[in-house]
Length: 360
Image (tube, rainbow, N blue to C red):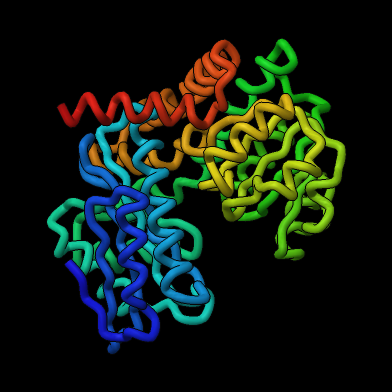
C-alpha cells in the first residue's frame, strides 16, 4: 500500500531501503489538506500484530525519515520477542515539527491510515507525541494504545520504560561489581525527556551520583533542582570519568568516536538503536571490557505497558514483567561472557529463535 503525491519529499530511491531491513510492508501516507506526511513501517508480524509508537520529528528529508522508521520497527520486533510478548515490530514517523504543527485533524487523518491496515499495525506515543494526541487517533481507529488514563487507557509509558532501564542497570551492576546496588555510582543520564526524568528519580532514590545532560537547558535545570543532580554539557558527556553511561535520547550515540572516548564500566540506557553499526560497535564495546545492556532488551518496559493495554490492562502483570527485565538482562550478559560474544548479538539471536519458531 502506497500513497505518494509529493515526489520532492518521498523520493523513489528510498524504496530500495526496504530489502536491506527485511520488512513486510512500508506505507507512505500523505494528505495535503492536513499537511500529514508519515511513514508506517511493519517489520515482522510472525508473533502478532506490529506495535510501535509514532514519532513526530522534523526530518531533513524522506530518506532520513524512512531510515529511522525502518531501524526503529526492526528493533521493536526484537524487543517484543525477547520480552515474550505476542507482538510483531512496527513503527511510524510523522515528518513535521511537533511543537508548531500538531493538530487534531492531522492525527485523525493518521488514524485513518492506521485503520486501513486492518489491525496489522497498532500505534502508541513516542518522541514528539503524547497520550493526548492518541485521543484523536482513537476517533478513527481502535488500533491505538497509550490513551490517557482519564479515558481508560494506560497513559504515558515512559515511567515503565524508566523502571525497566533501572532494573537492567542493576543487573549490569550485579555482574560488574558483585552486587546490584547503585549507591555512590557515577551515572550520566543523557536525555532529560520523559524517560530520562523518571530514570533520574529512580537513581536519586538509590543515592547514586547522577549527572544529567540535554540540549534543552531548562529541562536540565528543572531536574537538577528537583533531584539534586549535576548538569553536564552535551559536549562533555563522553569525556567524563563515570561508572555508567545511560543514553536516553536519540540513537546512534555509540560510534567509533564516542567509544574511543567513553570511560565507563557499564552502558545501560533507554535510547533506541544506540549502536551506529550493530556488528561493529557491539564488538568494540565488548573489546573495551564494557558491560552493555542491549537497548531493545532494557527499554522494553514501555512496550510491555502498551501490550497490556491491548489485552486488558493489569497493573500487576506490567509490574512483574518490567521487574523481569533484571533477570533477562543478567541471563544475556552471562551468555555473552561465556561465549565471548557481543551482548547485542546474543540478544538478537534469542529474539530470532522465538520468531523462527513462530514462523514454522
